Length: 72
Image 1: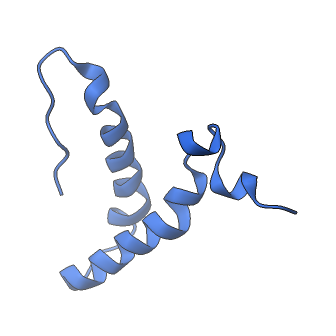
Image 2: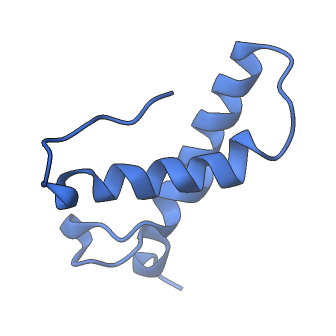
């Protein structure tokens, strides 16, 4: 995977993607070696769905995380 490249001098454009890819690398890619691309793909999708989306603050939820908006 490779992050997108923005214009020179537009540091804010890429900040969110750089943060995402850093978390992905730390939490999925560097944890172990992967036997197949399919195995890695499943691990990435699982991490995004189970962990990343549940912790990420979302604008449409008034900058709350999905787990903080659930009724107790």
